[in-house]
Length: 148
Image 1 (cartoon, one colour):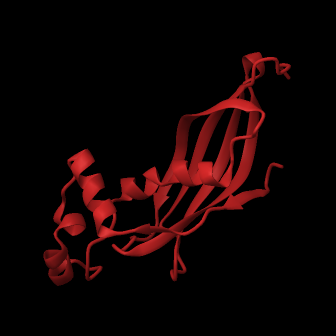
Image 2 (cartoon, rainbow, N blue to C red; image 1 turned 180 degrees about the vertical axis):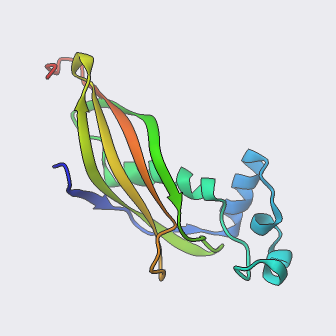
């Protein structure tokens, strides 16, 4: 399966309400994200855009929607991010989806596995993705599963 696409999520809207909620939760209230009128006047994007870290935060739930964690695993835990590149802004009101490719598997002790994936967050109607991230997940075997 290494090198294969694991799936593509449904389109998800990144509306101003989601951006405002993220700003409230994180304390990142930079005007380019939350001041709609100022962003329309002064932003090079001609309107508010999502926080880069909001777009990165979309990777985990959209990957779960795709079903990247194998059904026979007891759990899949975030283990790390090796590389993230924010390539294009996500304007408020845009829709995004995630495309995931399995890029590696590393066996660990006790039957655990590190799964490496490339995650591309696409912006509807854009030639450039919002981000590309190499993520790692620790897969925990189900009880009774034989270590490899």
